[in-house]
Image (cartoon, rainbow, N blue to C red):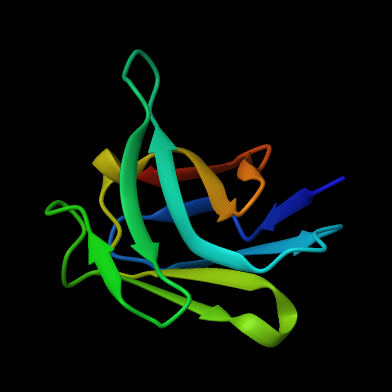
Length: 115
């Protein structure tokens, strides 16, 4: 069974930084795309950033220049470095990975940015 374990969330002041990690275990298949999504209270889940197995990245306009997604294929881990955090970045952040057998989500980690 594929499991995703996220870590790194927390409470930070505006302008601060956090680094999220998501490690995938239990997958016998190659992991293709990996990504981070977020969901704020009362809002729909939205894409934050994605990265392909080859390293091609995409970002939501709202985080471009502030967030950086990266991955360690040997460790089946994806990271999200978040700098210059704003109160509007407050949300539950979810890791998502795509393998040949389907799409898998993490349980989410809370990020709270105080003003």
